[in-house]
Length: 195
Ligand SMILES: [Fe+2]
Ligand SMILES: [Fe+2]
Image (cartoon, rainbow, N blue to C red; front, top):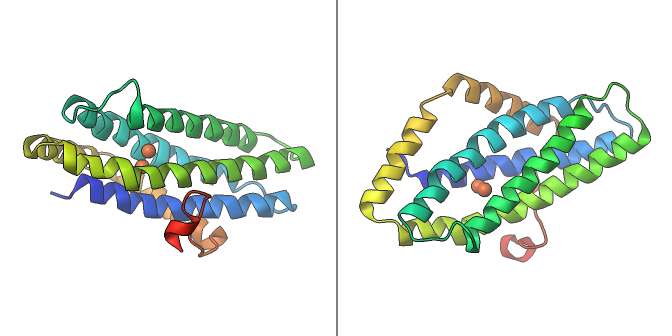
């Protein structure tokens, strides 16, 4: 059975590539390029990030850290991560609203670029916080029994919707290939750490 934390960390590396591509796509659209691929970015971010990665963290990992690891749901790192997931949902809703507009003006393109940058900065800082602070707590706070239970729940989750996830992975790979910069995503909190 795979390690849930290793799985989440691998997903972070893939999400970084998609978010980097979103950011550079935003620059292209801002400069007059075709904005229609935004709908595909929204599908990928909704399906793989919000509906899968963030949902699995909230429903399985964070609840295990609260129920079995003694962390608070009302304050501290878990509460902060919940707030950041909510902010990511809000920015994604704004991108989805833009994806639905029939005709694009300069202001729509400006908002797209700004929202893509805000989403990228938020996700970069959020994932760095999880990688460095919260994921390590799973190893230090969960008993062997709680860790095994978490691992079984992860396996059951990942066993569902395999086809849909594969389709979204392929869509994501196409967007990364088209728009990715091949540079590692960097935000203010990790410029020094990742140099
Ligand atoms: Fe998260
Ligand atoms: Fe995460």
